[in-house]
Image (tube, rainbow over all chains, first blue to last red; front, top):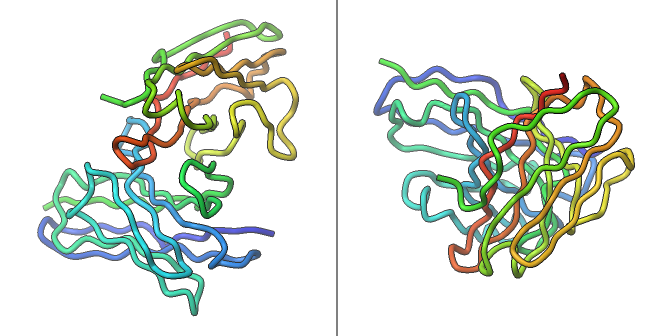
Length: 120
Length: 110
């Protein structure tokens, strides 16, 4: 069974750093890309960027380029989303999602989401 | 402001049919496949339709998709109260070189 299991909810202060994770199982992790999707409270889905776990190649939405870093450790089938300095506006639910290794392919499996709350 | 445009809400009675539109441009819908996702309250999105009109295993044929030019449509027949959810269209935008979603449509089954 394909599963993407994300790390638990986080509460952070502005300026702090954070890394959340997404662990894949039930499939060959390096054969599929992982994308990250943000959903701010009461709002819609926003694609942040994606990574190819086979070679760690990434590309980011212009809206998120420079604000977050996506990485992966294929030895443990895990992808990461990282901030170096959080802002209150980063408060949101973050989902990872799997898709085939071509642009425009559908997100066929999703993680359960990680809620990030940034508040002083 | 989302790149793809969806109506904020639609509603219909149980057993009826509803359609949800998704409008884009030549840089996204016009040159790429469209997917549709269902997000039930408090849960992660779920793939409903891919490659414009294909259903993943386990998705009932009450759900259908179509695409024409720079617009796509999700259709749901035989509405059930369990279909109440937010629905999102998504595709790739060649100019932005990014994935894009519609703003989402909240379906209410009256």
